[in-house]
Length: 180
Ligand SMILES: [Zn+2]
Image (tube, rainbow, N blue to C red; front, side, top):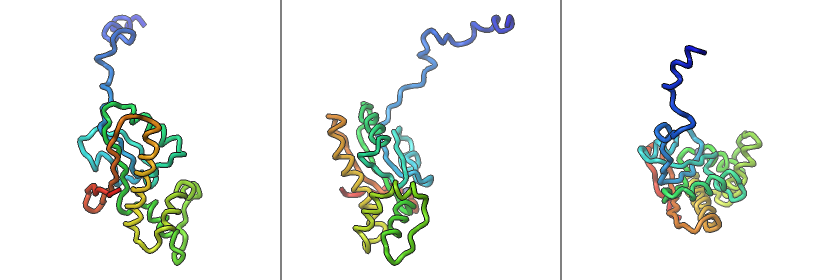
């Protein structure tokens, strides 16, 4: 203990001004809602950008999901955020499962029940688009989430945001815009 007392004055004063030890505040310019897929990350798609992030299976934005709403509410409270991006990707497992499950000629994929609960809206969408192809479902999945988010935004903030939809092409490693 005596030994410790000799050196205690060298330690940072935790009761004093901690400014020089505090991390800088976050200053994200983009709020990214993307899929959990390990091959698709905001850091890979937009290197060098500071990004606030919400990711889940098949990048769903559901207005009854308190987690998504909480993250959105916080994102729009950050004064530096200007754009909200919904990003799906090629080879999305969640989309592929719903695409297959919607086809009566295909066996239903074996997924955990929690995943089917999570993907309920996407499966419903897939059933309304049978015959249009998997890429069309990926694009439409993005449009649906963008529209849901645009709908809820005025209830959370009076600020205006650019809300965009994209698909990250894993093969080309590029973000492709989706018209909404
Ligand atoms: Zn995915």
